[in-house]
Image (tube, rainbow, N blue to C red; front, side, top):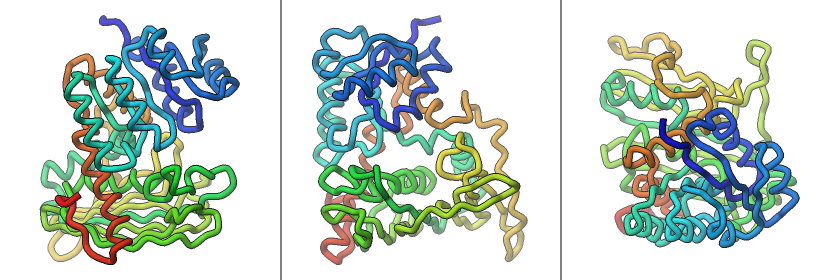
Length: 356
């Protein structure tokens, strides 16, 4: 067995708690050896949870001193590109949280540095790595939905106290970059690349800063000819009771094909990212058949947890010298959708992604 990938976790904020289980549950493949955060007590607290002793408060010092192969970049949005580029130039592979970067130019710079240095660059679009998404993608690729005609995603979330950065446009916040990017990426994963976007974004609650959007409606025109709808609204998260469990009913997606339909259900298990069980109904004659759960028993993922699966995929890609499913080269096309939504809302015109 080869030695585990030695990783430093960059940032000790809330999202790191979702990354941590991969290192705790699979130390034979990914070994967490250091944590770096400007807030030393916060870094020390996370190190205690991880059972390690090595912490840093300076990124460059860590790059010079720590015996690491890669960084897991969980800093906030504006730091994603510069810190990832610095790490790759220092000979470290990079897994970086979404969003990839703050502009198309930054995305292109990251890809260029990865190509120049030979380092693996992977974006943490964790929804792709859920057993449900793996099996839905397989159904689509196997033609079970026929020709894909349309898809939509719906999100209702309100940022409150404690979410200041997520609600501040100057810090890369807003509903698109902070949450809905996951759903847009999933639609793109299922339906292919987008060629044109028409959108309206608004800031309608007093929790948003510097015109960060919390209401979005967008029409996506895919290269295949399919169309998509993206909608977000700043409502308080509704909680329902399903079979005695509290569920999130504020997030859903649907994909419509000529031979069948895929429909997500509310999240009931924290291991299931954003959505719950996914249902499939084949088209029988002129009407849809009965919706039944998509079988995930043969997903082939090492875990039920998408965050664990994506980190193990990162390790595998480095070990086998293969490009990740959510590489920088792939993810720039998701980022262009976000930038096109902003541009369309600003200009009142449709935006061609090829022009970004």
